[in-house]
Length: 195
Image (tube, rainbow, N blue to C red):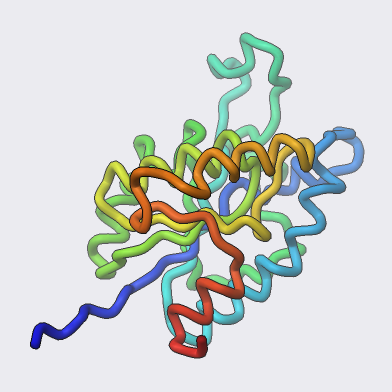
C-alpha cells in the first residue's frame, strides 16, 4: 500500500501593510481589512507552533509606477514605512518579508524557488485584496505546481459583495482540490489532523 505524502504548507499573508491601515489615506478597505487581523494572527500562531513557513508578500511600488497611471493612487512605495507590514500582525524576525513589484507574490520575486527549497507543497493565502493580489497569488501558486487555498475568513476586498463574488467564482472549480476556498479553521484542522 502506497503511503500518502504529508502536505507541507506555507502561509502567505499578502499586502497587510501600514498604508492600508493608515486612517489618513481614508481607504474603503481599511475597516474591512481590520476584521481579518484576528483570524490571520490565529493562523500565524498555528503555523509558528508547527514550524511551517510564514511569508509576508508586500507591495513595493515606485512613485512613477505603471500602476499609478490609472485610477490607483500611489501607495506602498518601496523603502517607505507605508510599505512595511502592519504592526497589528504577529510578525517575527524569522518570517519572510517579501517586497513584490506587482500583484502576485510570485511575479519576479523568487518565491517559487524559496518555497521549493523548504519542501512546500501547499500555499494558504490570506490578506488583501481578495480580487487582486490575493487571487493572482493563488492562481500563480497553482501555475507553479503548488496546491493553493484561498482563506475566505482571512481575506478581504473593498466590499463584502466583491469578496463573496470572487470566492464564489472559485468555490467549485475545475482545479479542485488543487485550488480550494475554505475557512482557516477547516484547513488548520485538516493540516494538523485535528478534524
